[in-house]
Image (cartoon, rainbow, N blue to C red; front, side, top):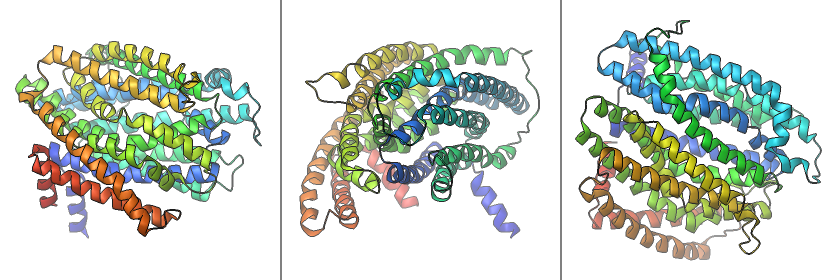
Length: 539
């Protein structure tokens, strides 16, 4: 038993290379997203695209604002680069001291903000969701009271995510990704269990997934605690401002937090617009959860895995290594995101029917979610590259440039979001917000690329990114043609009105398209296919 325990500890806390970390994060990201889609299927099947689900998703907005401003911005742009810098210089005790000070500082800020938002929730809800209170909605719940209560319940989650986020930063800096990668899995499992065991025992029933969110947020911290302890870190009740490091981190994170604040304004604008469509917030979230799957599995996974290496290269003044790693990561993101874009566009109806087509998720909800997913897909490649581009700026400890770009994108998104859904000639309706999101994302990726080029030099290392992208687009187009016509083939041999037949049609088309894509990228001698084949051979 002791040997088994030691073996598990060895695997659990093993330091990973960038390639291995990317594979681990992609694999667990896939599992997490499958669970996330199952979670959404349970919610959609029970509540549909209804007023109650609109309340559930809308109640995330204020807690998400706290998390993104105080925690996500600090971790992605400040904590990991500075923590890695200390580890690189063999200053383990200083690094642990810094982690404690920063964790305690962030926790205090999160709790204070949470209390303020708890008090102000009754005033904020009508502002955030004006459409809820300016139309006649047939519902058996008190909209105002339920929404305020949901917001207040959700305010507990940023506290647990603050702890979890610092643990993630410590583990990532030590290149230990396994416990970190499992956190989203336990989060989704918690919400799934709440839907299975609580939804019929609580009134209103929509409180059930909210309770699952809080338990899941707590578990994301709990699952990372043992591995964090084994790095040598121990919690201490300190906030040390004497060395000036906390002040330096606050100064650095301010532009990043403001940039995230600009992005959060986009989300608030989108929520305000969507509140005027019954089920609009739900449809947007259902489609968004589909389109984020490849972004999380490939874009964020690869960007997260390479981030410590980029920070380390910058700390060592090795800019050739920095650019080589950036090019390597960008090409691998494109290798997966380009065919994913084509696949989602061709298979959007099948995907929506498979994931959400159950219970109270009716035809109207299917139509609008499918339409929104189509518009989301247009910006998928940009969404995959944005995490890498942002992290490249943070690795060189530049948080101001992404902020300026985020402000520009905020304006673009806001203008498009409040115009596209309401232009009668376009007929976009609530799906127009998804199109605005994609167009703003494309602008975001382009501006980040231009400014990063100005900061560090040519991004396309030996023109490899351009050459790979050209080949991948050609291969993906042919793949899309194969997928499209294979749908007709499987329609002849399977009853697609049934779940089993629809699953056979979709998976069969994906398999044939995948074979076509892999064959073509091998035929075109794309370097990225070697990476995939090597990983398959090793496993």
